[in-house]
View 1 (cartoon, rainbow, N blue to C red):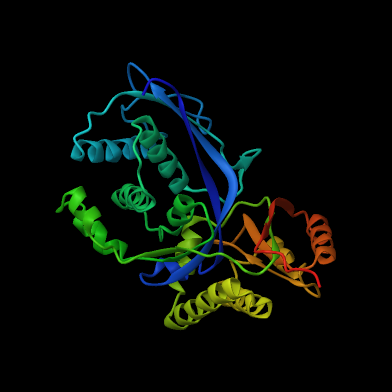
View 2 (cartoon, helix red, strand yellow):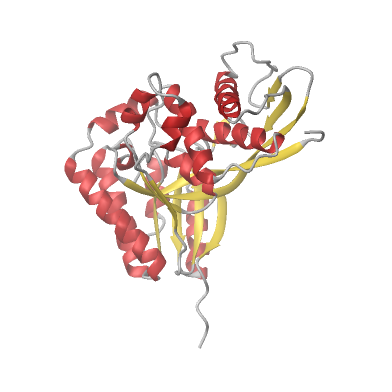
Length: 339
């Protein structure tokens, strides 16, 4: 603990399963986005917290802006105590707001900050905290704060990969927080599943940013109220088909599944596909690619999988004309050998 330690956390976007994964037992495919937040931690005489999200610094004294970071530190300190490790004060500086000119990309979340803080503290104490424990620690923090999310963002950010995530019964775990000690809760099987997906299908993964803020929390609640058994069962089916198609290299099935989950989302609420997101999706028409909204919708980002170099350029030109910015691109899967 004598020198500065530096850790990073990535962003994330949904390929499929958004909204459905909020129901326990439902699954989603979530892709890591290599746009990072950075945490720098080093020993200090007293706790000092700084973030480029805010114009002031904080200690562990109650501060509304830093409450998420402070609660994460408190949870990690409780875990350290259970391991008979004495906590030490430190200076933690967080940078990387995942936004531009005050407009968020929509690829990060409170989960990013929680995981970054946990990773920084693990590095500070030179501890090897495995992915499962990191996921549970982060979920513990958010559950204790009353977060109603699926925790799928945590799964993707912890594993820094494209993952298949099946959600657990958060209400059940939350009920135990006041009645059961942390280590007993962590020792339980929560019932989630996280597994990496390795695409065998070569394609370009593109992220288009609408530069518009996502739909409000109230509107998200309205969309959630429209979820029914049909939406859940059909989304689950397509998520499973998509995972199999990606790992099996079946381009036709990949396109079909993404089109179907997109249609299911559009049918859930007209608020999900804004004019910009509709343009983002429509830009793929007639091309060897597929595009859809990602996450809550109503703004932020959409994604596309493109299977042809020429069509990729056409898609990007169409996005540019629609005022959609290419935020990230990468090659997924493996190239087929040319005959």
